[in-house]
Image (cartoon, rainbow, N blue to C red; front, side, top):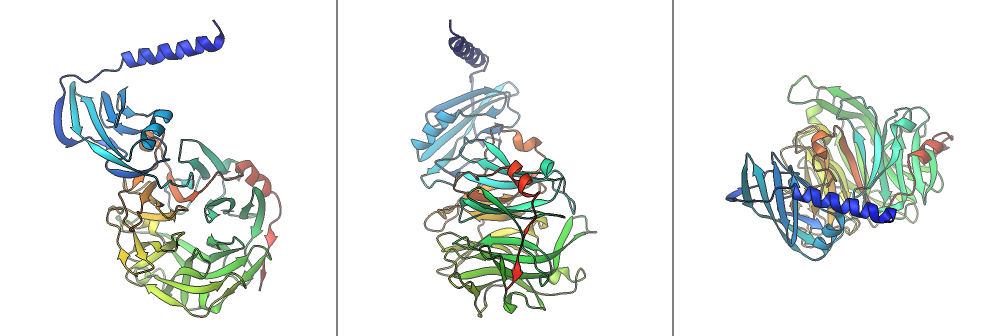
Length: 477
């Protein structure tokens, strides 16, 4: 017998043995209650290209799950779908009825079925995020990871082992294009790492006229420009037990960087001495810069009076000039992280009671404005009683991803939400993992998730190599 045939025989025998050892339901009791599964994948809308939605049935000794025509049995509570059968299931159905039958304390119980609603609107195939411990004013062992959401493959774009344990953050692609993106490596000798078709450049986007280096940024549609804020960031630990940390800016201005000429473009309207300006983002047509702005207050004494409005100012990509008319769009609550959908129809942002760092605000929610009608959607189906923030759109404007602390109030996890063509948001679901117990044991937050249409063409070793070179300087226009 050939070696290949031996391996095939052994694998088949093992599978048969495993199946034989898995109990099958008998004397089943019907229940009108829902099964206790984690993550909560009940009655969610999912894209046709998502990875298998493996889940855990809490406290189960054995489980049988029927999803459409597919049946999975397992000893223990882990429910894991094969890649091929999962793909066939999604491609062949738009509504999938899921029935969970679980053995607990010697009794088989069939629970109330739920559904998966499959849509043909695919999600962008790759997701990048920073893995960070949920600490206060320090960091340790950071990584920026790229994950294929169609399966469970992941790759490191930047790794603390290769960066002397530096702070690293904010990997963002231009218009979801993996061939043009940027991330930051902080600290002495650090810089902005610009990816242009896999070729990396190290940039020092700082001039003496600016209060600090570049902090939050986004590309213009053409990729020639980035709009960014320059922030002096101060962390402060609360004395109140219900709040952990407050992070605020003592200074913050907004500028535009020309990546072809290494030039800083500025406007007095985006660097007013009595105001703070931050979280800039281009509109998808490049005609506007959206941002958040607040009057300065005495800090930290009056931190609860620090409230940011949503504003915008024109920009001309052809000439690289900033306009002269500021429009204030929203003042109801303090606004952070405005992001316009690629089709230009909606703007998504975080709201909170005050200040500028929603990740430490339990009350932080996502809201959305229809830019055609001005209608505001408070996204009640999306938000929880914990923090929701750090959101980004898919390239087709049908999905957005965000970081939510809804499980325990401490660890952020990436959730995906479908927005249909009528602008209706659907119940979000958590990024699937191969091992359904993954989130129970993983002690890092998924921070600043960003989608891309393909695989980013560099890795952590490439970043380590470019960091050895001097940074390209920028000049004041």
